[in-house]
Figure 1: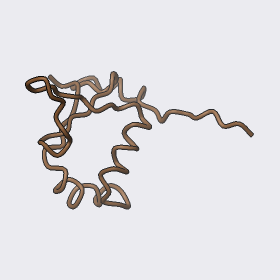
Figure 2: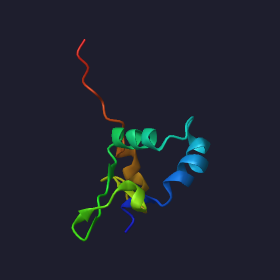
Figure 3: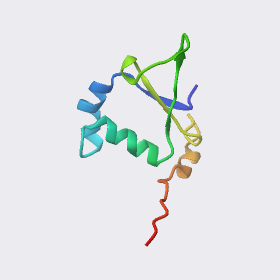
Figure 4: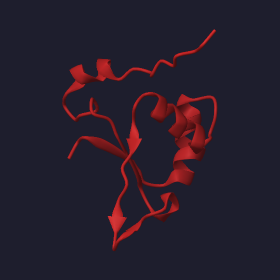
Length: 85
């Protein structure tokens, strides 16, 4: 529908794709970064059981990540943390 993206093969993605754009090949680190920018994993429920990550594709979505609406991308920003000094 154009409001999310899929990682079809986590192992291939981590080994081949992540190192091309990041200084690591760690899928967990990539997911933490996505979470910092407000992306959330889409949970799929099959036959009443929540599927585990390794069962197939992993899907992520963000309210401002929409196919064909590039102007929304500027709204995807890293969350700021309130640090007490």
